[in-house]
Image (cartoon, rainbow, N blue to C red; front, top):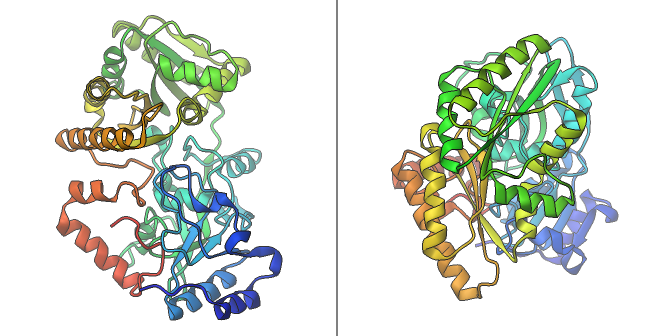
Length: 463
């Protein structure tokens, strides 16, 4: 179906990109053949490093006319194979489109290119007294990638996810046409929301080249509590009680002792406490310390009444660095502890988080697998990792498939879905079909066909 890159195609790309931003065949680094998932790998035939909407539009128009598949890639930090060039073709790297274009203090927006890193955006706006709340664990991801997967993160409990902070997008369609969706406006009831459709579409409907993002004033105070529990069941069953108390928490994170130990070994730094089986990490932010302290006291009393062993205040620079650096390193630490891993990025109702985590322990015993986990207990989004360790290829594939079948099946039984924030990509598409049903997936295919009738943009993903 797809057209392989020819010498004529190479000559066209040379008219759009200078030699230092254009690579073919063996010139393309191995990094570009995969994302962080592992196990899914394929090289593009051509790699271009884009600097403008116009360059991307020229590539898309040509590719569409010649039936050449195109995949867009940011930092490559995804975990579902969404940016892998499964059919070769052209890969558009947007990491050098990394400029903050405008900070509009009157409209509380910042306009950025898609290659801006989350950590750089956060630092830029905070230095100027503003706040971009979406806070996924991978801070080196690009904003374009965050928008493409509707990334959530630790502050979603209070502030919401990426979708809630995207006001406008500039998008290149597969045909090469450029459209503007949304803008600096706060409200919009003008027809179907193509803006919201583009968010979370994993690069299958269009190429994001500019984003207008909503900002908030920077909270004056942010303090966390580290709360140890004797068991995972105790810790997680406290979460619905915290939610019911209507405490205004920014983050409610859950993790187990063994995950902390991986992070300690990976970072070479001690965590403030490793005496308990499981932990909650709770954060409150606000305009003044007095109101934050009142909220913290209320939550601390609730946790102690629910059986917490202790409550540690995370308010010094040293303790904040120790706790949050470890939390940010959990994924890489687990990855470093094994030969290969895969992830179950499941989301379940908040009052069923304990059921699901305890079920993963049962699956680990039944299949003789190591399955560490952590996650955003406050919104039911859990990151569960299946570790290969010393298993041979056949045994790994068999047990991995069995673990996924059991865990995604249980998630569906208790009202959950297969992805909370990492997307579907290539790796999870069969599970999405099972969870949503053929009728819903058929509607998605119809949307894809409308945007991309030739199917050239990120083929082989989602369905």
